Length: 453
Image (cartoon, rainbow, N blue to C red; front, side, top):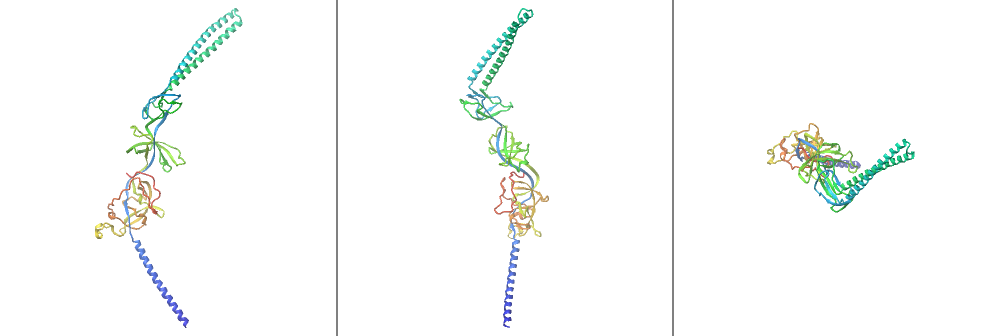
């Protein structure tokens, strides 16, 4: 009996403890649901920008240097003292213009010596011709006498041998005269080399002296540079394109070139050559752009920036780059729209006339998109095709959102269909960097500059 009382007491205590635990659990669960419900209804303050239609261009910006169309050095073909230098840096030069004069005394003497030797050779040839004429007459007379049996056979043979020897002697003399004539011409040519000229094929071009390497009085060796000659119209801009942009470049494309020397001026050129290979070290290919330089404003060696238009899309659907986020592995944007069953209110309808939107008046929906051209801070949306506006996309605070989240729009953005408050423009050619831990940003941003026009 006493055992049963103890058992009932224990069961009663256990029942009371279990009931207390169940009540505590119900209270905790109810509190959690309230907190969860409250957390779900907290709206996120965001900023938005409108979806718009405009022109967008895919423009590649490349840096490089200017090179002359052609460049060569003028050097002497003979050794000699530099007697006179007729041009200096910056002077214009025409085809076959004399650049420098070397000391020609030695070469003049060589010409005189060659002339004298030629005269001697010619005199020997004339003497050999006279001997041949005499030998020929003697040979013919011996032949006639031999036919009449007056001269002996040995006399005929002797006359014939003399005649043949005179013929050979004349040939040698003529050859020596020709040799001396060539020696004279060579001496004259070497003498002409003392007048150093600038030579190129097109006679109508005017070029300029780029560099000067020696001074008057220097002893020049063969092929030692004196000056460099440049062709500055047109000029060649050399840039290097990466592997990603290589398929987009082709001969004939127009390029807009700018330089720090003339910040308010641009120059137009065209691609004339594309290297058929990419360097393994840099994975870049050389591209040459020809630029007209009739005013000679541009100079070889200047640093340039070349803009090449790869593509242009008119009436494209555009959103800010900051609107792109990723959810569940898909890239898209959050589109702001009025919450179902709520009316967008005007600031006058708000208590205390505050310029904020009423709670829960706006929500967002996540729309997966396929992007096209990325130009600066603007992105082209290709798909879905129905994504064409008008509408608003979230550009700030979107990393806190999910599909269906409630949002709060600042000031006039709460008025459906109204104008949005102008936001501070983003400087061109600067891309927004995601904050640390912000995984909602889109993937790699293209290095493009220029924007919708």
